[in-house]
Image (tube, rainbow, N blue to C red; front, side, top):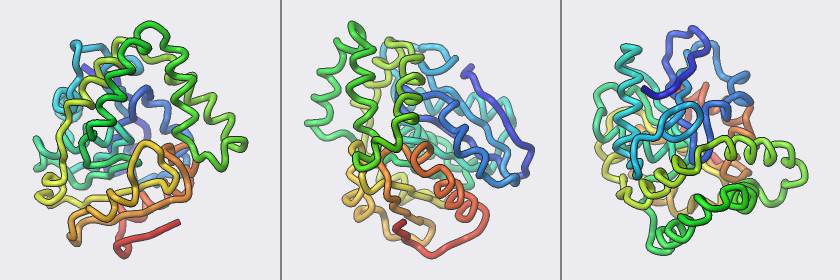
Length: 260
């Protein structure tokens, strides 16, 4: 079973899934601002943190099944699910397979689009360096995920992100890269899902085509979107703002689109 940690004893269960080369520690900055009404279930996805590697390819569907094992063990029903980046892809796979248990899904600096051919090829080219020189792979990639206009201010968070990434097993990272290549477009999942859908995105996100993604969200009353003045890592760049949105949206209601 996947490694997980529970904090808080609120009445609303919020399951939190980190992104690629991250682990459950990424939520520390944001957690202090989240409402005490939440009980936080923070999970290490396969091949990350203290969780095992389950094969040569970790598809989003496989990771969703492993998350379901945790939520079943905890007897969770009618809960909130939030995923950062790859955790968002996993959340959509979970929503496709198990929509009946979800109260909300939050795409946290993530997207419902599948990889285009250019992105798939970029990922394929990374296979060898992940296994042979993981430190170089991390050092080259991590800084690009932060707001380029604030890299001097964010230097400490960039170093923290590198340290967390380096704690990831290279074989686990590679299995997830292969799984991300295989993932399919999940717009139909959003169209069919009755649960609340929250999208928090970054204006300077180099990993997500934010404007295109927001424009292509289904026109449904249960979908809310926010664009923040940050990069791909709102949990480190804008933790207080992100937590305020989550508190307000998942516990209350706001109008449809916001730009911060």
